[in-house]
Structures are given as structure tokens and as C-alpha cells.
Image 1 (tube, rainbow, N blue to C red):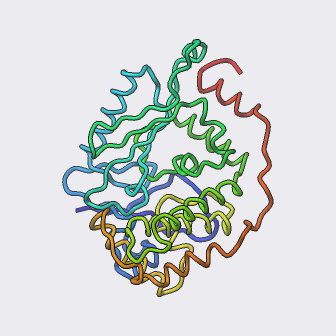
Image 2: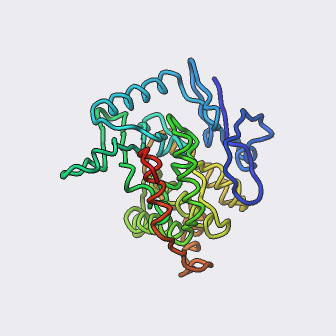
Length: 315
């Protein structure tokens, strides 16, 4: 059995491609204190592969299966996959035994397809079975995603599990993200997600789905990360908690909640078991405005140049 975790960081969030298998002394403080071995940890039996640019070990069979499915989609739709990552609970660090694989990718057609009268599909979905949820977004709509504050795209660019990447494309997307710096839009995106979850699954209910409650906590922490760090929130839940939560009662309840979620995605129970978490979520909505100015929108010129580069056309 192998395990690997994201290393502890201090200060402002800085994304890098460094990696390493960490000893117990490198675990996030709250994991050490509460002996929570599931958050940020992937324990696997059988052959494994270490993603060299990241901090995750995945089973070789899984990696090969993903690659085969991506190659089949390329052949079927005549596309070129530029970037493919794992999203969802596996990338957040708290998968359960019944978690599916949420593979997300960005793709491009040959430039001639974009000149046709009937535009090619800008979304490709593949749901062959319950274990695989594979969705791709067409490239021409993606350059503006960072400026529009799409938290999913922003987090994909720094995902802990990367199946395939065109390094030039990824770096260019990251550069665009840092140019636009859409922190206000990201803040409101995370806030809106958390608020919607509270309204639909928590408010006025005695029993809640613990997976939804955990996702609400994660979205709330991501909102606070953007608010306090002026940076994209990390995917790994363990990093959000280790950097933002110091209250012992909160840490203990997060510990218990993740333990429950790690057993199954479909556990429901009384929300009264987590009074401090509920109070933390409520208090996080006390501010009506983020503590920074509106984002500055930039011209389309950088996005147009980027699009031409990816399609191998002269800028």
C-alpha cells in the first residue's frame, strides 16, 4: 500500500511542478493532529504510477484506461486533446469507494473545421458507464475562461492529477490567467456555489447529505482563499484546510465529516453533528462584498494570438 500527499506550504500560494513523496513530518498539520489518513492520500494496491509533475499516485491500469478512452475520443471526433485532468473528489483528495472518475479535457480541431458553415461541437461528453464521467470543452471558448472567472478551468490548470498535457498550451493558459487575475469573479463563483448548496441541501433541513455538506465547506474555504490570498484556490482539500483552518473544534468536525464521506458518497444524517462547521459557513457569508476592487478586463488581442498559436496558424 502506497500513499502520497501534497506537501505543506506556508505563505502565499505558489504553483509549481515540483513533486515528492512526503514523510509523515510533511503532512498538513491538521492531518497529523487528527490522524486523518484519507484526505489528500491515495492508497492503492497493485502497480502504481507517480505523476512526475504532481503529487499523486494512480494505478497503472487506471492511467492506461484513461489514455485509451482519450485516444478513442480523438479518433471518433477528429480532435486533438491538449490537456486532460481528473476533477471531482479524486482531485480534491477525498474519494470514496464508490466515487467515479471525472475526467475533464480541453481539445481543438484542425483549423479548417472552424471555417465550415456548421460549427463543430464545442462540448464532447462520454458516459459509457457509471464509473466514467468524461467531458471535454472545445478550445476556442477556453481562452476567455480565465478572464470570465471560471473556477473549474482555473483549477484544472493546476490539477493534482494530469493525464495528458501540451506543456506550451498549459503554460499559455496559465499566463493568460495571471494576466487577467479574475479574483473578483472567482470569489463570486465560489460564493455562489456555496450559497446554492446551502439553499438546496442544508437550509431548513434536519438531515443533510454529508457529501454536499463537505462540498459546501470546500467552496466556502475556496472563497476565503481567494479573499485572503489573492490567488486561485488549490484543488486539494487538505491544503485549503491546513492553510486556512486553525480552530480545533472546526478541525475535529472536518475530520469526522471527511471520514464519513470517505466511506460512501451517499451518507445522510443529522446536521447537528457539525454545529461549528455550520456556524463557520454562516459567518463566511457575513461580508456582502469582496475586499478588493473589480477585475480589469483586457482586450481580446492576447486571446486571439493565443488561439492562432494553438491552431498552428501565423499570428
